[in-house]
Length: 149
Image (cartoon, rainbow, N blue to C red; front, side, top):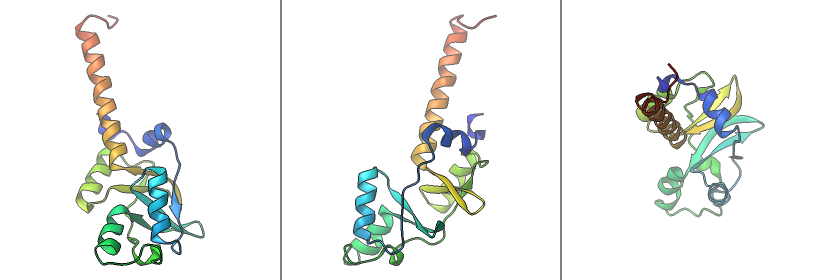
């Protein structure tokens, strides 16, 4: 079953790029970085150590709705400090379950205390869709007699 595939396979496909900001960056700079990178969240790193995550959701709930100024508010004031994580060995199914139960959309991928990537709910859904399409294509080829005997 494709849901047993690990995060490592997704990272090999999508890459290990991680976009991050420091806790002292302004919220405005973080939002601009998210827009430039076309992502919905950034890791918050201090001295190569993961200290949290900041997302568009954090911005809307902790800045926009409270009338704070994004150009002067530091990321440290709005970041989510408890970051749920995955490892390279975490399965797609486990990630989906964790994201659903914790209501998060991004999981940093850790190797010990080092960040080696990040997966989003979109990455997981796209992986599952590609896997299902591949399986359907293989079944259609088998039914049509295209599979070797």
